[in-house]
Image 1 (cartoon, rainbow, N blue to C red):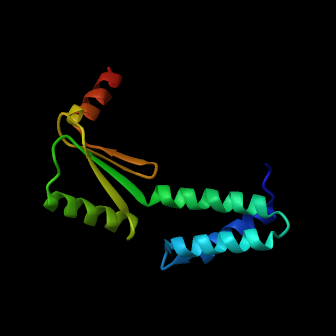
Image 2: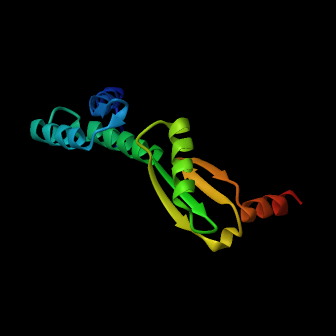
Length: 130
């Protein structure tokens, strides 16, 4: 489906209306979608499609995965959360995983940004450089 400029503008306006203090409000998203579906204005499918894309991108930007070679201590979790909040702002959803294949260090993925400080990542970079 081709999305017109007007549908993009309308989708972005809906998206901005759902933000509270810079963060997306789930209740407002549900309310906006139900109102648009009830009214069914011209081009509403394209508008909702673009709105959905913007919401998905925002959710991806606001989720972080931290993979550590060993179990992360609560102090480390707090320090990582504070550093990521300083860099990306409040409202970041963190999930912590253990992957012994990293050998040592950790790998952090926030949206499309990847910070790889693991031994396995450095060995892979060294291998590709040779």
